[in-house]
Image (cartoon, rainbow, N blue to C red; front, top):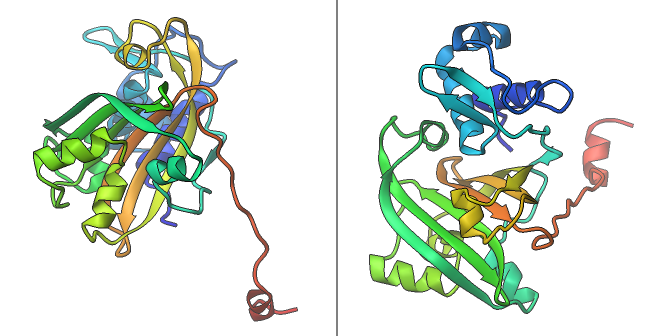
Length: 257
């Protein structure tokens, strides 16, 4: 697996500062220059990390006033570790679930700075953005947001909309098109769904609800990042597990007795 980027490390350092007992909603963060110096990073790296936290609602930026703590974040319980790369559509089929989609949106949109950095795009570049709410057996299961690298060949607009409306994932379409997708780097973290927000409306929230967010970066076998996804799962809609094992006997012998 690739090493964490400096932006990843900065994001986690900021999240630790926002942890319960250290910060409260509404607290003001230090100025960017001071914060960058405290973390030992450039202001550019800091801003990319702040963009990520802002997109999650963990911080709020107010023009002319500064940056403030939003919902108090907890450090991620674990990152990566989901060893088998399989689309959610494939998982659903194996478990006998029927998928459907609400509010499917497909557009060419400006890529946020932190996503552009992950995909190796210039700031302000445009790329396919796909958003939808996923239903499993008629119940809201997740909200999905995918940004696909512009170099990736996707089906035509009508075919793409038809395939996704039936519950297929962008990963399925990329693999069917012969894209050499090989692995994903996944961050798993808690998320609150709040009524009145865009996410809350998309997931039909009537009260503040804890959810699970998976931020995933797909790579080809050559290590090139081709898709960035943020999937927020409703409570009880996903059961994650991690497979761990001992080194093989051959590996143990290679390392000596």
